Image 1 (cartoon, rainbow, N blue to C red):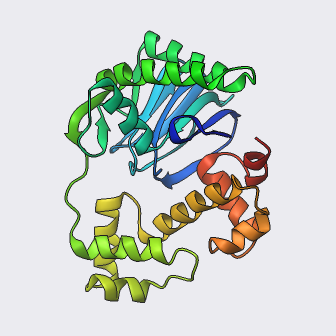
Image 2 (tube, one colour):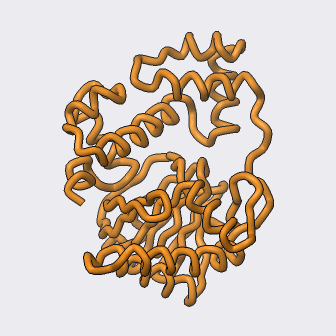
Length: 263
């Protein structure tokens, strides 16, 4: 995985997978990618999607999904993790400002033009001679048209979240580096533990523990980009040790923290 600072920053991952299984999880960014080879099976929106070569992945922030190989030889993909502020910037620059978090029409879509645009963006990010001018020109020229075709533009995706579940989410963000107890979260929500787990999952896609792990991984990515020691990062974000961080990091992102740092 590679982090680049263009237009406020984005992450890029080109990977070949054979046996990787991703547990149910969410991302804080928009995830847009291209399946280049094989088949990636993904469970999302209540059904199983068989994404073959040429399929374009389109996931909004907070959209829960899980998956793995859909064929014996696995699959290859290029994935771009695009923060909301980057998407907002390119849409506003093009005159197509969005209201809230956008929703995509489907988790996987097909478009030869968009596939070529994503392949070219990957080549630009992999080429050490590419200039920031060239990369930002492509992003600003490509993304607004792609989003207009692939998303429900100007239709907010989020449903209103009841304050009690918002308060639990905010507590997790504020205390992600500490042990978090279900008793505490239930008291904050003012409901039973079972009601908390079910309600939180309805509004945020995953139960509280999975959400906490995701917050820790996102923070670990930010710290690792500052060249901090992996073991130190693990402790700073609330994991027991480096191996604990590595297990969850690879499960969600498909790469280890060490590979992320080296990229």
